Length: 122
Image (cartoon, rainbow, N blue to C red; front, side):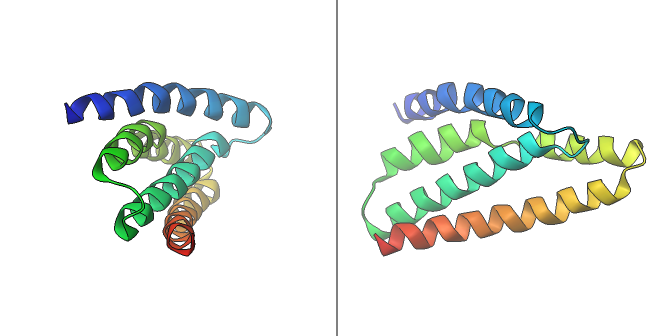
């Protein structure tokens, strides 16, 4: 029945990704993929929180399946990140593509570490 927890998280995560991406991107008049950037950083923060909570014993593996695998797995999107980086490069926006890769990875890692630390501090 673990798969039901993953599915339940994904049922929330996938539409949240789409709606958040559209809402964020509509507020920026830029070729930079802000929507994908935001959902990936938020997902990394949530995953860090969940991982930290499980590591400290404040949460169990069921919550990890629901939120970590299900919600975050559907919320974050490496494929769209890759596609948008390629699209920026093809459009001649190599600087934006480079910033997307460096900032996306750095911000995602920072958010995951921050979430893990916050979970341990609580």
